[in-house]
Length: 384
Ligand SMILES: *Cc1c(COP(=O)(O)O)cnc(C)c1O
Image (cartoon, rainbow, N blue to C red; front, side):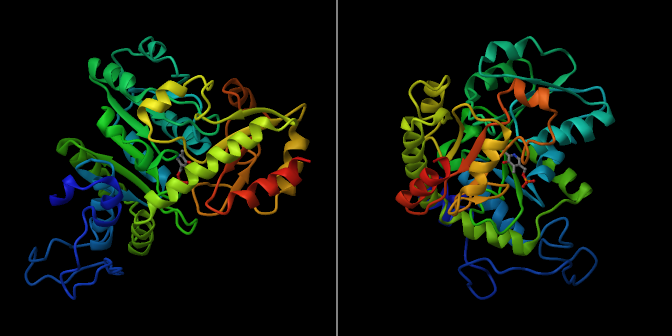
């Protein structure tokens, strides 16, 4: 692709894109069609049936590949559908090593769906990459990491895990949803697959559910394209268009998410009623140095606990917030607050959850791009 030389802030707008061939439309048209006319059997213009490929989805897939410094992008009906395709690269008997502190739905997919098919998952803390090697055996095929982790904001050293993965001939997949390619590019750090819930920052407007994979190697891309077409959880043309539109402003949104995130993390930390704030930008965050190395900024995701609080207190605070909407999800322009124990992480058993720090009192914020003084005033009244 000719735009490889472009800077990230230009790739979000131009990466993999060119005016439409038919009328020169600057934005890719929404090709709301299931099928394509053929002149003779097999005589088509690259598109036969929209599960296999659709021009609007292709435009999104090319954009995804460009912004992740990859070669091939694949767009799915949801983030979990994208993950589902990755696990389908495996066979019964294979083993996966995964971060223990991960999105609740990812845990559910691994544990409740794929374990039934004879795939074994080891959920471990990976902040110390040395621990990972102990779990590698001849059956291990894939390492799955999420960084920053949800909702504890732990940071995992992608480069170190990639070296380990290469040494043992494994695949390394990174769920980079929280960071976005604006903050970190896992393929450049040695990962084989980068995955996104494009529902979050890439779409950025809380109006769509989409998943993405990006890879560099052709062979791996071919295997994933085969699964995408054979299993069929593809991203529709309208949704592809919405994510493409979101990506065009990713860099400006992320810049503001980072600025507001920093201001709110610092506000919470100095607040007398706050017990603990989880945000990788603090110099005393246990993985701050790794975050500084592999990320361009620290993002707008923050978790915190108020002093002496329990399940009921946390619920009271999230209910009192007015500008922060109490809702699942993250990464939109509007600020959201959530209670992981009863919402995003309710599908993880309490003991498992608490082992990784997701206690009942924990509150998670997705800091939006509103005026930060309004956001702080809202937190102030809710915490009071
Ligand atoms: C939301 C999310 C997912 C799942 O994506 P969907 O688009 O909801 O299927 C996976 N990983 C992370 C980190 C998420 O936040």
